[in-house]
Amino acid sequence: MIEHDVFGCVIDVLERLKIPYMIGGSVAAIAYGEARLTLDMDVVVDMNENQARQFAASFDQEFYVNLDSILEALRSQGHFNLIQSEKGIKVDFYLLKNDAFGQEEFSRKRKEAFDEKKQAIFVSPEDVILKKLEWYKMGESQKHIDDVKGILKISGPKLDLPYIDKWAEIIGVQNIWQKLKDDLQI
Image 1 (cartoon, rainbow, N blue to C red):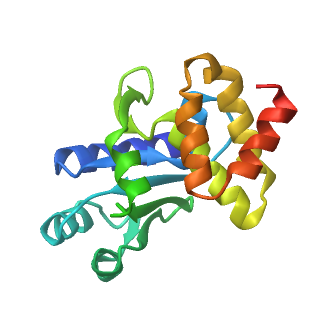
Image 2 (image 1 turned 30 degrees about the horizontal axis):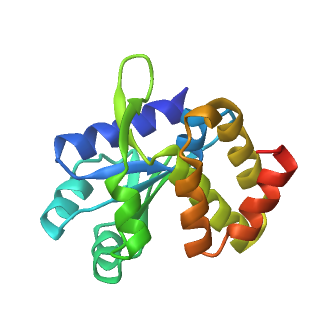
Image 3 (image 1 turned 135 degrees about the vertical axis):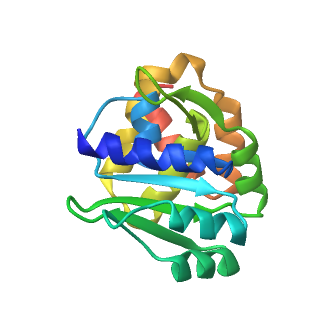
């Protein structure tokens, strides 16, 4: 599967350059929940300008990556992306936020199996749920709720539900979280 190869290549570059990262979004939801198709990967990174230059230089013409976009993301604590040109597979990179939730989330990252040969650093399942609830609040895309349900189904007994309850209230998604818990009788 070409998506998997592209994602694996990105992980290899981040690790070779010693750029702290964590995989979130759909790829993390799949790691902790139910499988589904995704053509993109979300990655939170904590990089400096020198690492940004090395990162951009690490990819050949098969990939579109723009150093100016990366440097602007560093200045604005925004995001940038890398696209595998032929298939249009995208990796969205988000700079680590300095807010309380961003710092807490990054401190809870964990190493998990990426595939049968490779391990990678992932957002915790609790934080994937919280981010998916935030994204649902912003756009009401059902895929985010489905991802949360998949994580609850597969990883539910291992989840720190009080942690999710606490942060759901702080980040303003407690109503969505409570409705989901009521619907699923959690």
